[in-house]
Image (tube, rainbow, N blue to C red; front, side, top):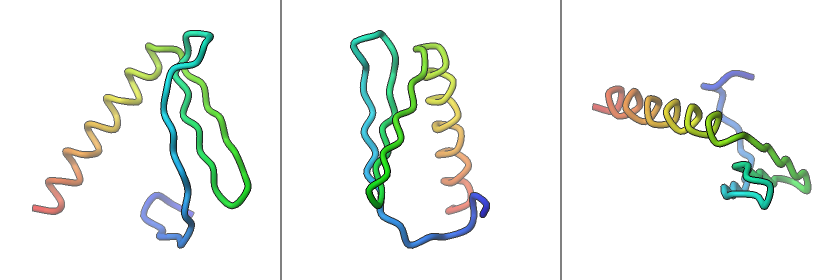
Length: 62
């Protein structure tokens, strides 16, 4: 499965700080919970990648 493969799965995404000073992405789908913790610097890099993907998607969309 690649990034362009569509799937009919619903998931919830929560993003927030932890009490340990980390940034958590918490994904829940079909009874599975995936907590992903990142230090703030890693989270900034992920945010930059998301912003770049938004720009690329907007360019494709026209």
